[in-house]
Amino acid sequence: DRGQADGFGLEILPKLRDVKGKHNNVSLLEYVVRMYIKNYCSEVLSVDEIRFPLPEPSDLERASAIVFDDIVADINTLENNMHSCERKVEKVLKCAQNPQHIEPFESRMKTFIEKSKNQIREMKENVEECQLKFPETMKYFIYKPKSSKECDWPKEFFAHWIPFSRDFKDIFKREIQRTIKQNVEKQKQKVKELTESGYTKRARELPVPYFRAVNYILIIDS
Image (cartoon, rainbow, N blue to C red; front, side, top):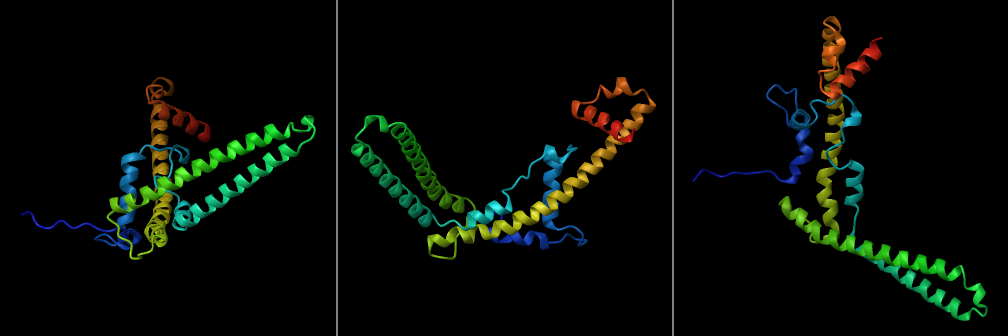
C-alpha cells in the first residue's frame, strides 16, 4: 500500500492565480505559464511566431451559453421552413404557363434548396456529435455537474474554464513579451560579438531564424 493519491477537480482552475509560492512572489498559474513557455516557446523572437495554447475566453463564454435542445429546435424550425420553401417552388413551377419563364428561377432555386439541405444535414450531424462528446469530455475530466438538468451542464462546466483561460492569457502575453525581450537582447549581444570578430562569416553559421534576427537587429541599430 503506497498510500492515497488525491487529485484536483476543475473547481481548482480559477484559484490557481491565488496559490502563491514560498516567497509569495509567483503564483502557481504564473509558474505553469512559465513552464509552458520554457518548453514550447523559449526561442521565440516575435509574437507572430506563437499562438495562444488555450481556447479563447470569448469562445468558452459562447460555449457555456449552449443549450443543445434549443439548437436542435432551431435546426428543426429551419428545416421545416426549407421544406415549405421547396413546396412553394414546386407550386410556382407547376403554375408556370410559359416554359420560357421557368428559367433561371428553377435552376437557381434547385441549387439553393440543395445547398440548404446539405447545410442543415451538416448542422444536425455536428450537434449530434457534440451531444455525444460533451458528456465524454466531462467524464474525461471526472466532472460531475451539480444540476440534474442537462441544459445547465455546459454553463457549469465552462464556468471553471473561462476565468482560468482569461487569467492564463493575461499572464501568457506578459511572459511572452518578457521572453521575446530577453531573446532579442541575447541576439543583440551576439550581433555585437559578431561585428567585433567578423560579422559575415560567423553570422551565416547561425541557424536561419537567428541569422534573420541578426540582420533585423543590425537594421534597427543602424
